[in-house]
Image (cartoon, rainbow, N blue to C red; front, side):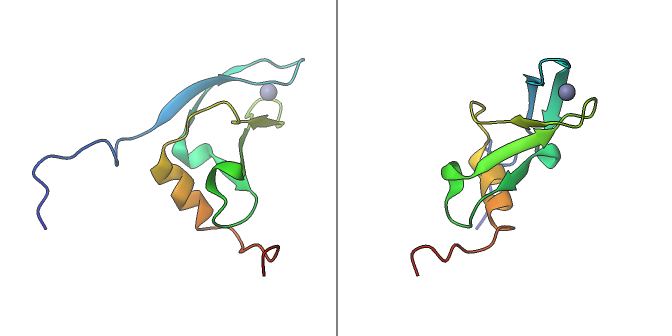
Length: 86
Ligand SMILES: [Zn+2]
């Protein structure tokens, strides 16, 4: 297969958020390599995505941030399989 023109799948992602810790509230620019995940493989959007604030060290939830599917899938692949439905 040959790529005629690159779409947006691989485009670099970054996003601005404000740390939710009341005594911090630092505005941060995050990139895909900053995103961490907690949850189970295959749950994708149900999993908890977050970053750690570089200033206060607290977790900042990315619940309301639209993370590209490519980034979500990459992180999902690092998770363990849930045994819930086994
Ligand atoms: Zn903070």
